[in-house]
Length: 362
Length: 259
Image: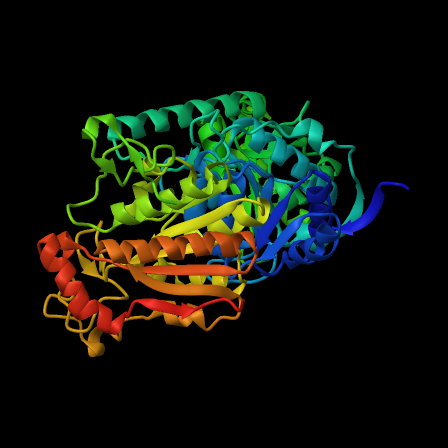
């Protein structure tokens, strides 16, 4: 049987979770990601997964804590308002260093907002979200194929670093159908032993305790220093991005997820008009591809960041560019998705400004 | 099982009690003098030791005075976010169905911030034991009003006494839980006298047996004291508890499984 299928992003992600050996899913319905819970309640249970529809997102994330602490590969999924409810639990999970997968199929906010796609949760996903100094490993798919692929990667990264991983998608990626091919993956060979888990204390070892409480400040500082060292290591080893036509680019677009597909279309259209544009797509939003952007900034005249929000990732791009060249932003909000033509017009503005400022160079 | 043996150090006297040697650590309790937590911890771990299920038992600690329960109980434990212990316990039990799983929670944790988790865990009939310590006050944060604080009772946030107009009625969550069909066993006990402690031990033993038989949720409330929060001596607190708490929270079985 072929492993190539035509699937919705949410369903491809759920199917990948089963194939990745996810032992339990805890979740609560919310549009536009309920297909994940529905798919797993049917297909996941048939194939041995524990699937529990919880009473809230608060309960879901704390079930993830309990299940991960018991040594299992576990996950939850939700969309923006539900992910907000999970922030306390994510802080505890990060502090207790429990591996798990959290999926956010981002919808437009703030508040109850809209069920349409958005990237308004970038800050929440990459800057901590909950209380205290912690980080999630954040992967941003831009296709149904990556909705599936990143499930395997996220689980592996979570286990490797004992850290919660997030897939930050959006409502369009969750709902649209594309061709997807599932990779060969053997969970038994990939999931590491978890000797720290609370599986019942035999006489042969000390008791295992899963906690985020360290009341002595000296101890809590040491925990924080260890976490920061782990995040540094993750940044060194796991930062991922993809370049498109950047080799000869004079203007660099930076965009992730669905916005990167639109920006790619804009790059092609701009090149038809004679603007040598290129695209850098961050795949990991945390760790952020700072070095890749900094290197490209050395060779371009300007950077345009395209997002489906009011301008969030653009702050990280500016930190990477460090004033080398102008950094502009184009975004649509509230569930509106920009067209490639809009992005090209924004790029045109940047190019014209550059021409005015650097008339001699032209 | 009677723990009767002759200890040479006792010079011929019969030793009638030994604290659990395997399941309690030697760490000194941080609880205030006269507090009931230490006795409940000891009883839980006595049962685990006597049943020989240390390797099969996983506990979940709350946020509140018992947040450090894992310092004393020598078993695998998880420390949950405030109010979420039963959700954490649910996941552990679903993934490790052959283990004994219990949560240990106070009144603020279980009956205020964690009410939704408590009710839905019980309503799903999760096959776990929930131990609920009700001393009608927030002990760890310094004596604020709890959902179970009695009418007229003075706390730092009900300084002239709890009134219905301001704070509503004390919540009898144990009776509420008992109405749910997924719940197998609900009992209310205490630990202020040796005989009360023996009754609690019997209740905990039964709850472990029911969990082994997959009967559904077991829920044990322990009406307890808070000498520090109530601003009483331990003796006064126990007398006050008998006089004021027991009429509203009467000890005894509320729901027992059909045999």
